[in-house]
Length: 356
Image (cartoon, rainbow, N blue to C red):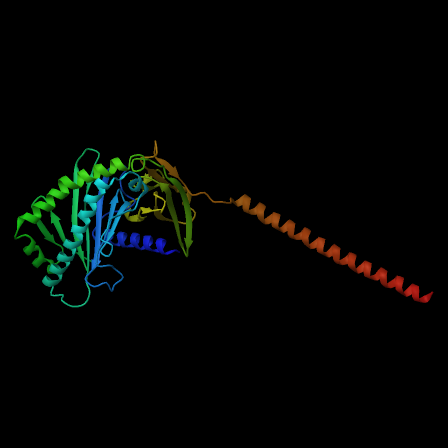
């Protein structure tokens, strides 16, 4: 694995960790309705000794990484071909300046939280996820959450212009940030106006890429461990990420508590993959069907597990192996006998030659 690949993988792992920490869903149970989102992830440490930089920012459109920024370079870097090909300097410069501002604000916020938690020594980490989602009906959902040292900490509420403390030690910071409403109004303006505008601009840049629909390749595999048989339905190489995967038994949906949902994750080539599993009694695999719905499919797709070899096929294979083994054995025996006969004939000729 090269340095670039390793850094890219580390970014993905960090991003997934922040998303899970701050409650952003990536589960395979998402509905097929199409929406678009713009999401920024900020992460960093007070001291660069935990494998994290002082500040790093990642920007995603529909979970597609399009920009990165770090404290050392202080520069926004395009991370998607459609951004490299179409973004003009006049549009990219404001984004770069905005991320520089977030770099400074992140350091200030981390210092404030550390002071209010009486954490003046050792290194501590801060994670932030903020952005917006625009649905098909043009309604907007916004989010702005802070995580501190791996725990939910604060969440901004634009409707009321205040903060919700996720833990007791966040109360001091909540009260401090709520003293002045200027910051809260700026936050709301970004979430409700600037974020959707930036999202629409990015969607225009990504026309033909972000609006494409690639249907999933679906297969069902079986896994047997001890007395438990598990069927896993896998959906591969699909785009967008919105997908629904459900198990049915005897033409009835399986209860959610009996199903193990999997995450929808990037495949590394701009598409996604996901899975969902169900435990089945041995010998009843044929009663289960996986139902998949995706914007790239004209109608729901169904898949079942099929044994690669039936009982008659197994018998035929075993019989074939047995026959081949017998033929091979007979062939080897025949060659040995021929060699012995040839050896005896040569000995007799030699003895007759001596008698002459």
